[in-house]
Amino acid sequence: MMARIVIIGNAGGGKSTLARRLGAERGILHVEVDRFLWHDGWVPTPTGVYDRLHDDVIQQDAWVVDGLGRQASIPRRLARATEVILVDMPLWMHFWLAAERQIAWANGTLEHAPGGITQAPPTEALFRTIWEVDRDWMPGIRTLCTDIERKGTAVQRIGSVEDLDRFAKTIGARA
Figure 1 (cartoon, rainbow, N blue to C red):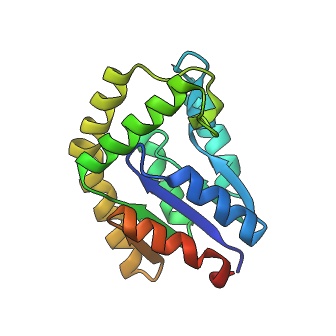
Figure 2 (tube, rainbow, N blue to C red):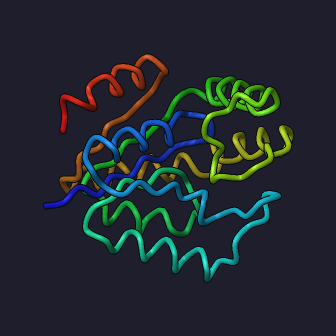
């Protein structure tokens, strides 16, 4: 069976960095779902266009997809996954890491911008989104992950930066 890996969690948790490494190590397509969700200026993609792009990718045999995307697409993505990595750190850590990314963006030192967007999101809007995702989305995502794990899908939970670093160090050994 080909690997179909979902890396999901709140903003700033290192999902895309981890996904790039996993995709390269396993020789599979890496897709950052933010590329489907946003256009420059943080303008959202129309729902129908997003759904078509998302579903075209997840119907493929092998991939690693990172990010949240549209909430309604998450169950479809998780249902196709052979492996899920849930980045579920404390809220304050997502704020901290997102702030570090905003600073790197402002300093011109950000190596990979989310979704390939050229300008940083407004910090207030980003932090409001992180708060809302933690409050409104993460409980359901945790439940979905528990449900698919009970059905046999491997779920790796990352609860801290230390967990993330430990997991990242095993990527080469897992291939």
